[in-house]
Amino acid sequence: MKDFPSCFNENGVQVSDASCTTLATTLATTNVNKVKASQNMVTCVYQSKLIGKSFLIIINWSKSLVGHCFSVEVEDLSHKCLSRLDVKPSIFSKRKGCKSMELDLIKLEVYWDLTNAKFGSTPEPVECFFVGLVCKGELVLLVGDLRKEIIKKTKCRSDSLRLLKREHLFGNNVFGTKVEFKDNGEMHDLRIECDHAFGVDDDPRLVVRVNAKIVMQVKHLVWKFRGNCSISVEGVPVEVYWDVHNWLFGSSSGSAVFMFQTCSGFCLTLYAWKNE
Image (cartoon, rainbow, N blue to C red; front, side, top):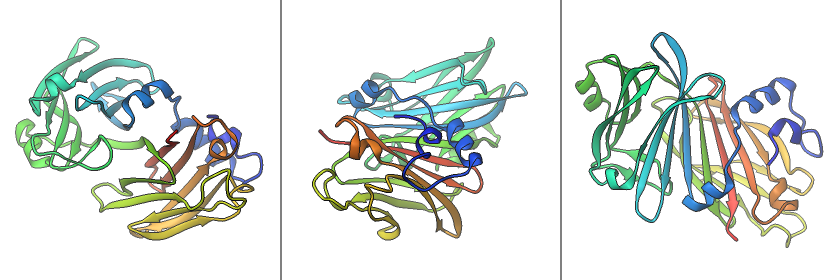
C-alpha cells in the first residue's frame, strides 16, 4: 500500500499539501505477514519526555491462539528503536507485574495490571487496566483507566501525549472498533461498512457510522476510491481520509486504509483487510 500523499493525486477528492505532509509523517510500513499471523494488531504511539529529551513510546497489542500480549518500544524522533520489552502470554498469565528495560544505561520500569481487563473485538483492552512506564521515579507514560492505582504506586502523574493509533481489522463488508476522539473522552463505536461486495455491484457505497449513526457516506466509490471529508464527533471536528483502491483494483490480500484526524493532532489509522 502506497502512502496517502502519492495516492490522492488521481480520481478522488484532492487534499492539500499540508494534509499530505501530515499523512506521510504518521503512516508507517506494515508487515503484512506479521499482521496476518496475529489476525489483529493495535499500535499506539505516544510522545513523552525521558531524561530531558522527547521520545516516542510505542505499545503494540496483539492476540494469538495462546492469549493476549503486548510490547513496549522506545524510539527517538527519527523512529530508531532504542529499547524494547515484550510481555508474552507465558508471563501475561500473571495478569499483572513489573519488568525493567534500559535506555542509555538508565533503568525504565514497566508496570501493568490486566487482572480485570475487559476486551472488545480487538487485542487492546478497553477498560479496567493500566500500563505505566516509570523513569527515575517519574511516570512518563500512563495508559488505561485505572489511573489511581498506578499513580498510587508511583506518586506522580503522566504528561504523555498520544500521537496516533494504528489498528488492523479483518472482516468481509463490516469493520468495527472503539475509539476516543479526545483525551479521556467518551468511547465510541466506529463502524465502516460497504453495503455491496466489491467487484459484484457496479456502484458500491462506503458508509461510516459512529454509535450506529451515519456520519459519512460515499457513493460511486469506483470513481471516489480516495478522498477526504470533515465530520464532527462530541463537538470535535474530525477529518476523515480513505483509500480503498486495493479493495477495488488490487490483490485479494490488499487492505483499505482509513484515517481519522482531530484538530488536536491525534490520528487513528485503520487498515481494513478483507477475509479471503
